[in-house]
Image (cartoon, rainbow, N blue to C red; front, side, top):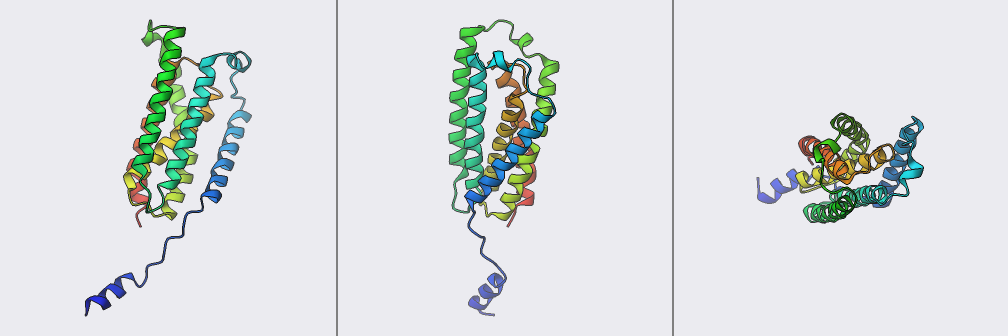
Amino acid sequence: MSNDALIDKLVGDLRPVPRPRFGHQLVILFALAAVELAGFLALGTMRPDIGAAIGRAAFWWKMAGLGVLALIGVNVALRSFSPESLPRKGLRRWALALAGIVFVGVVIDVAGQGLDGLAARLMWRMGVECLTVMTVLSVPPVVAFGLMMRRGAPTDLQASAAAVGVASAAWGAFIFAFHCPSDDPFYIVFWYALSCAAITLLTRAVLPLTSRW
């Protein structure tokens, strides 16, 4: 068999991967986020002191920071499903945004509470509950992103899976933040970082196995 005939045989059954429809995917994701948030709050989970919380800088730092991380993460994840994308560059941008948000949190923390009693401020029992709920809230976006990733053509599966992980973790954390009774930057950074790490490790382990093309 000639080389040309062999090549024709190997590629004869291949079909082109359709170009991702970012607008359509964004509509699906925002609809899912709205439904998940509405469902979560319908369970009576809105923090009871929300009226007092909106007057504190730490509350707005938490909500705005998580929102920004979720939006950047969604953008990086969706773009990573295209074969020509470079998701590691997007992940670096996400990491830079995270570093900036953490820095602002440190400034607010030091100015407001100082560095005394850090271990007590972690409130381990409540923190474990927060970690568990945030992880559960991250599962729906992981599933949605996983389906989109499977239909795409990512060439860097590990980086794309990591992008899905950080986007889903920030998404789940943002929804949970409406319930979280703590605005302590040290508490937020510690427990929310653990949730992000857990979800990202999960997606890096599972999604590359289900998204090969």
